[in-house]
Image 1 (cartoon, helix red, strand yellow):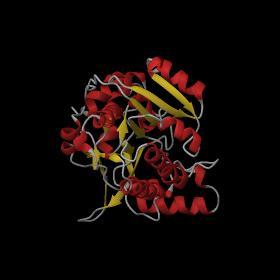
Image 2 (spheres, one colour):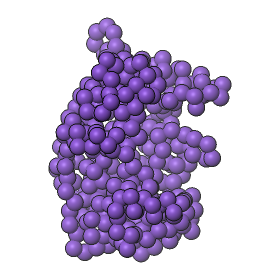
Image 3 (cartoon, rainbow, N blue to C red):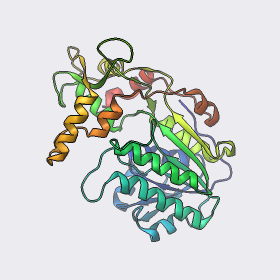
Image 4 (cartoon, rainbow, N blue to C red):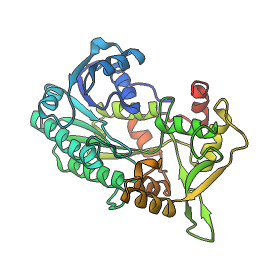
Length: 332
């Protein structure tokens, strides 16, 4: 697993999204690397509890109350900062304005604008996602792509990170996979994944995935700050082990305490699942499904890439999936 790069010239790094799974680990690495952090949060008490839970030295963290749609809060966040790491994102839309358009596109426009107003060439590291691109049916994929275009059109010294499937003790997917293999989450009697029609031949096949540990993602973001050669570059972040989705689920099954060995992976054709999600959404029942149309579409695609370009450019010693999962599985 990657080690933090020590920085002897500590700076103030503005960060959004620090109370999330990835964001909290990025914050840890920023402080460990000798920087001070200024974080934007809607709920300061929640942020202070997170600092305590992660054993982060609060003397090196300044809390700014507000959200990414608050221009005054954003101005305070980036004022005098040497760099900004933007991590805010959602995987599914929710009530109270939690839309892909607002959280991905509008937020990117707002934070990029605030950084540029403070310093046109501020160092800026942006969280995107593997496989983004124009897509009218997959809102997550499409809005992440349009957020990238906003970043690239700016004069900031930007770097874009595109992580694939991120695993770790507190990760949402890891928690869900642990519940699946224990038979404690729908569908209860098998291990689900999205399948696709074979490119060559007859029948369905499973997509491939290369899980990356959350600490390697955190190191990628923080290491980029002190590597000027990564400016104006985009990196795909994946782990060193490529496997099919069923193979990954079986790894969880081997390591998670209380897993039921008789459960078998069964693929759900993504096209059928996408239609189901679209129809459910049209009649107001979309929230009853554990996935939306875009998740089904993306779930039928591979989530893999060559790990070496990012690993070499960002100084990452990428952790092996099964070996790392074994270090925290007992706590799931």
